[in-house]
Length: 71
Image (cartoon, rainbow, N blue to C red):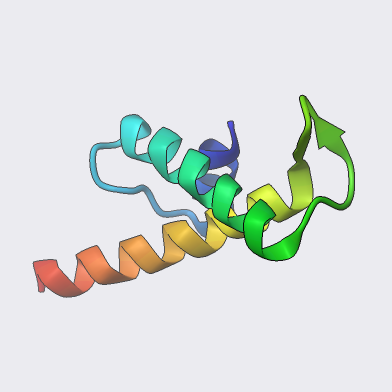
């Protein structure tokens, strides 16, 4: 779900479509929570705001890197 939110916010998809968004969301959520801490509303012990921020940053970075490789 976090990956879908990140993809919608950035209006970019990761390679492999929805599978890439799920993996990117999981990794981004983990990174966001590890770097930004656990604050804000939580769902199943996952802080939503840091998870979304981490996933958005990861989706942007990966999409910029893959776009650069495709050019």
